[in-house]
Image 1 (cartoon, rainbow, N blue to C red):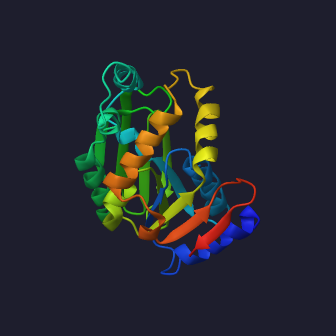
Image 2: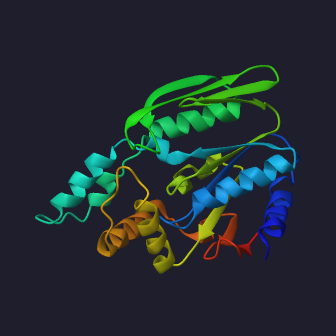
Length: 236
């Protein structure tokens, strides 16, 4: 299925209650291509006249890349089966508060979030709700949106934990081998590379499935994303 046709089917499904504000969770296992998919879908929605924002939920990580790598390095001496939970903590209270505020149209300002590019806890985010507008500033980027037609696409691994905050959830599915190779390629371009090994990748995946019930059966829509140029809708 061509991506334009796929996005059009998704758009028609997601707007079945009209064009009012939406909060959509886009989730999947590590390396499934969530961010790539979300970026492209946001651009499609904008062409449809929908104000759309890609919100990378990794900003709620409460550890730095350096801290994560130290935990991984320590596994060489003493293996800890709970290491993914310690290496990738998120501020769950803040996530729930922010999603609630967005739903209810309440202003908020937060500092010391995790910068997606540097993996340092140095990012600020502000949502300012006015009569017909929402002003959103994330880092140095600030944009203004129509308050009644803004679709916020939240991209993250652990989003099923906050399922009640989303209008819809979309599961992005790819095979383990493809996802691992995507991580290796992405890691080459990072200023602060991660320590990526298959056994560690497998540990993280098992932890996510067990702790966060990260299963396509628990989501509204499922998209096969093994091939970015030939995505397929499995469930809608």
